[in-house]
Image 1 (cartoon, rainbow, N blue to C red):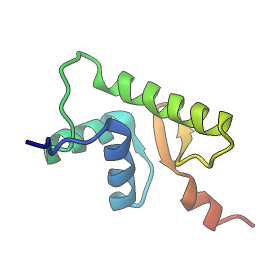
Image 2 (image 1 turned 60 degrees about the horizontal axis):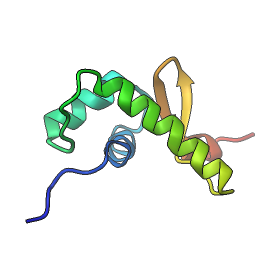
Image 3 (image 1 turned 60 degrees about the vertical axis):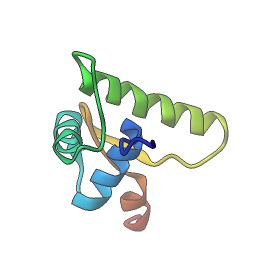
Length: 88
């Protein structure tokens, strides 16, 4: 039986896309848990997600691939595509 849960970064991307605005890690985790998108057993899922997003960005940059997330404040993230559309 396949789990309905997704990775925390996939959930974060979907949530940011749905909301259309930057959110804090704590907000993203809260929404993901409310929607049943993720399952967490640790004490600090927000710290884990923040690290996961940072590591995904580093990995994609190292591979020469575009990133999905952009940091807009302390533990606050948005989607790169929003900022690419609004370049002057």
